[in-house]
Image 1 (cartoon, rainbow, N blue to C red):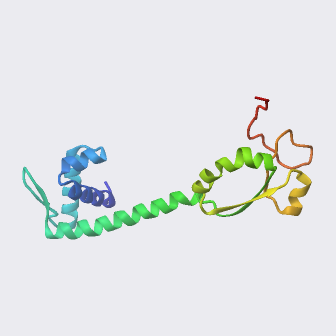
Image 2: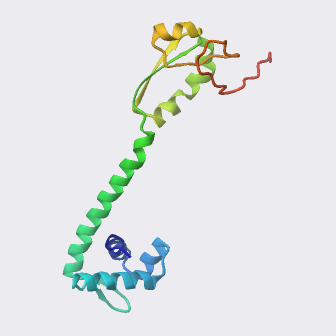
Image 3: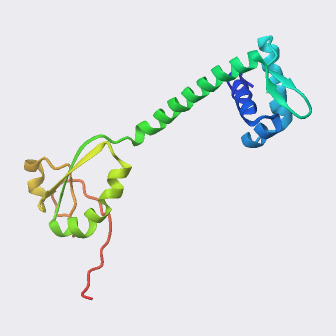
Length: 166
């Protein structure tokens, strides 16, 4: 087991108040946590915990290790969180062309959820229905109903809408 993992076990055991509780929270065997802490103590030439049958308490050295270890684990979690958010973090301006009817009936009711999901993305919605108007208006995406005309642009079917009189 690597040193960082043993330091994490030290922090979790100190927070839980026992090796058994820390093991349960981490899905490990209590003896694995106890052995990892013992290895860390041997490696550092320190006693980190006062152990009794009823209580687990940090020594002075253990409190220092806990404080610093908790800080490292917190920084590592922040780093991992920032790294995992990076691919999903869309930023910039997306210019979308669509008809007024599509805007009112389909897009606008779902817009709040989309904006909450991608807060760094700014949407510019324009009333455009013809592919030939896309370039002149600087539109990145054109949403329209019906089959796409043969124009050489990349087109994808997003949904099928059943029309009717009710």
